[in-house]
Image (cartoon, rainbow, N blue to C red; front, side, top):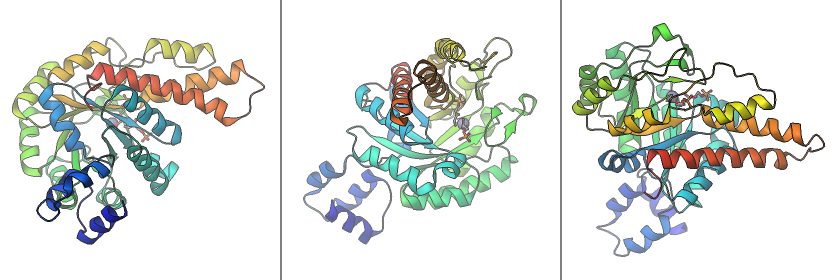
Length: 345
Ligand code: G3H
Ligand code: 13P
Ligand code: ZN
């Protein structure tokens, strides 16, 4: 390990293990041995998503803010033998600290037998993307979806030029989802992705994955009426672009979690998500990365409420947060099965 770190530092190359090993191959006759020793480090989103798109499954990107969420994702991935993406937003970084949260995630990946990546979710500017690249993230999203087309291209291209030489993958977004992101986007401001613009966008930026707006939205209140995604639009985009496509705002807001949370005092009337059959259909049309945050938050909250209500004498945080972690883990395992990533590690 020491030897690996030394060579890694010496050559100053890349956060991507496969790319690093490729560069080493001509010089080091015992690469196979090294590969065995470093295979538990973080991989990139490109490493995870290109095979997913090709083979017709999707990899879950699970938002984390704390130790319990990281453990939930890594334990679920190990149980399911599934690849996984640990996603961290700028507000998660503000909450947990960049160094803390990235080290927790890296520790999880290093102790895991399955491939995992560490991804910046909804990076808002060049500066945060650059900090995350420097901290060892293996993928960054630059979210210029609120910008004009040319400005989004310019910002995204700048981040690609920063990230690619270091072996870091880049995701961008074209179109605009409704719901709560860093800033609230009203439903009327949501703009679905135009397929021809999407094609031009990926060609001009060189991104590794593209997030598309096809009717999903962030948060627990996705639809006032019946859930409806624009599958025709998604199909057209996927015919024009063979890159992995990304579905944000994809939580299903399962009724059983809402019922459990409500039983213990939560007020979540009107919460509604994306039905699971819609998710499966979207994967069939090229979605290879699916972002989940809300369902983890709901599972966490419902379980903390349950424990506190049922055990009023309990005051050991581990006895409160442990079950909440287990509840998130069950949700993650369910997603891995639904997305078809179980058994793909
Ligand atoms: O889009 C991602 C999240 O659901 C919003 O997360 O509250 O950490 O910014 P955040
Ligand atoms: P949900 O709010 O549907 O979980 O979406 C999360 C997301 O898109 C994070 O980027
Ligand atoms: Zn999102």
